[in-house]
Image (tube, rainbow, N blue to C red; front, side, top):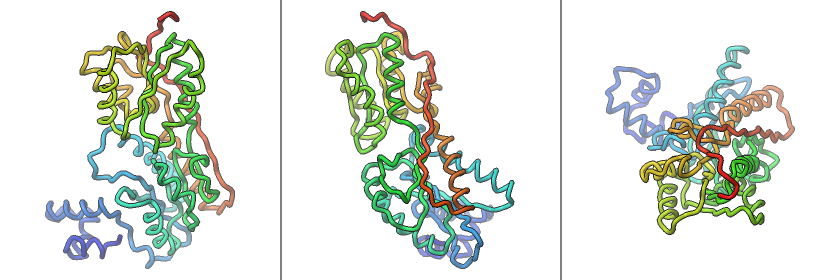
Length: 351
């Protein structure tokens, strides 16, 4: 998508589009809104084919979320932290070596990821794209990425080579299985034996990985672990399913492990509405640490996932590859950690 195409879609002149992009305050607000709305649906790429650069200086952050969507807080924080990590390193490096690198945000929500890659391949044929950062992929995207044989240098954030077996892709992720194991160990160490694992739909592989630690310990007679899966990875779906769970029968669980903070938002909304006190009535912990967990009263114990750090490491690797054209593949796994707060109470083993 370039400036000419945006002009065609909006029935405006190229000069008007250019004024909007330059931030001209004299442009009519309704005209500016029309252009920005169209840009959000069709990410804009400058016409780099007319420019000659010694080195690729354009990097793309590819997300399944449109920037103009009405997103919940945790979704925004999920990809914005990684994006901030990339941009912070780019900004610092640009100053140090006096070289301009541009980072743009694009989306593939309106189409398959293979179609978006094909679109970017055409742009990249001019030798301008130095790297493509992809985040938040589902299993259907994994299959397409595994078959990718193009020329774009891809950095997949938050996923591993286990998810996408393709040697053309570099991976920067964290240990999802360890996140589940740390959650299990913490709850059991605090005396909890009746635990609900509240998780998301199977098309997101990280839910499965975080559940493995609990599956591996289910054969222990002293532990009674239940699993609930939502149909969507959203707070609304989480609230619906936690309501269904507590509405069926009187539960004997003493603790809930919510496998992502997106779901935690919905679970907390239900518990707070029903007056179920954390941790006096029910202990609660989650994975991720974006905003909801530490703003709640009391703050929620979490397994912290290094989203900002993943973005920064990805930027380091991308710039080094761009400078020296390394041919080696990268599998970089960051650690996760327990961030203990006040939402898990210690109970007697007999409870």
